[in-house]
Length: 397
Image (cartoon, one colour):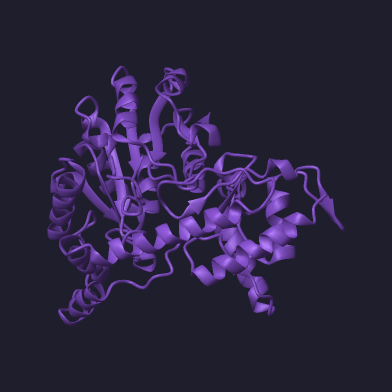
């Protein structure tokens, strides 16, 4: 009998973190691995944000912080929501956490009772499912594919709703597909959700600033359901602040208060220095963010051109985030040497071991035919990685 709890024994390790760890181990052995597995911008935090953090150190922001975050930071987030998204959340409706991942975990534990259902359009971010299951909820998948641009329809959403549905959770721009819902598409989903007043809508908008469409759209701006939408965001992707750990949400007051209560028993308030830097990030110009987005767009176009040269891969050109999610099912059943590709996980391991390129299996995202490529790295490395992938996949027969 294990001394560990059933909870931890039954929990799956994050596939993205596991693949990143494996590629680091190979690198430590001297193997030239190119990692396209982690969703982390390769840019450094903008200088004006770093300067704000240095000033905060000098100003002795070194003490415990309020659990939901400093009031002036929550005011800055409230203003950001109004300015950028057309969302009306008062500071009392905002909770900051140690990353958007903690924000989502808080929500799952505050909302989900055993047996409650959470609807997830698949593919979805790996931690959604893990957190729901940890809260003893049930995942209800809505499957999508490349032909639908990995987006669900209102009819699919309505068909998935039962009397046990507690929440609908999705991301736009989406991790792992990069798909982006337009305001018109979100309005269609909102019209369905308006019929079911007990369903909480959770919109993960962490990739908001890496959006190649005309304008980012927030479902929380729809008046039919705005009073029960939780909008999740953070600084990691848009401001190249992954290691700073600052996520936040705007939520109905009852939910915000519950998440503050939950967080108070786990971590309390997030890092004081990060919070001071976050105020500067949100209140300043977005020029570095826009420059990063322009560079990501160039990389997206480069990777799309290279993937088109690989027979057997089927993919859409994503409108946001920094991922491709190609369908590689054409390679299932093929072999090379001692390798046989029975499924998408086999294919990712094949690429890691023969091409020394780390990707992530789509099985972790709720899709058994696709795998995720993160193009948040230099063009030189992207050129090398895609060339290696093309060469390795060409050997399968």
